[in-house]
Amino acid sequence: MRGFWQILANVALYAFLAWLLYDSTIKEWDPWFAFVVAFVILVAVITSLIPSLRVSTTSPGEYPYDD
Image 1 (cartoon, rainbow, N blue to C red):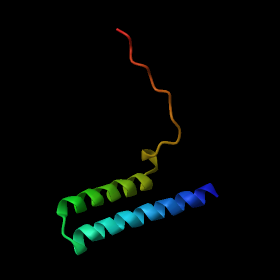
Image 2: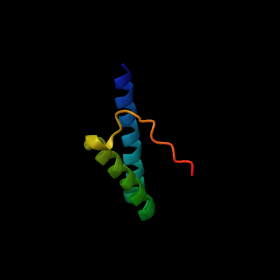
Image 3: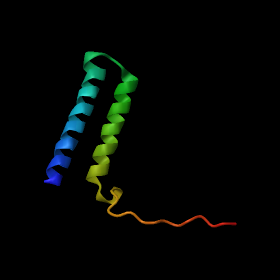
Image 4: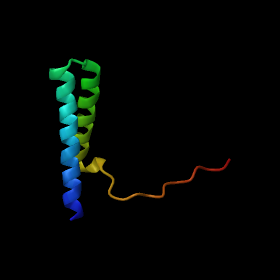
């Protein structure tokens, strides 16, 4: 059931971004805001389409050396 809510949240967020893009291009012209919203949508789509860009697990990393 958790996956369903994640899908629903993603659909709602993408719909909100699409509405913001419509609002900043067709309804009231604001090219800078439209570019930012389109860039966010593009990064989200690319991240979801390329599996190697997603993090499957977290690693503890390496603590910086004390010099």
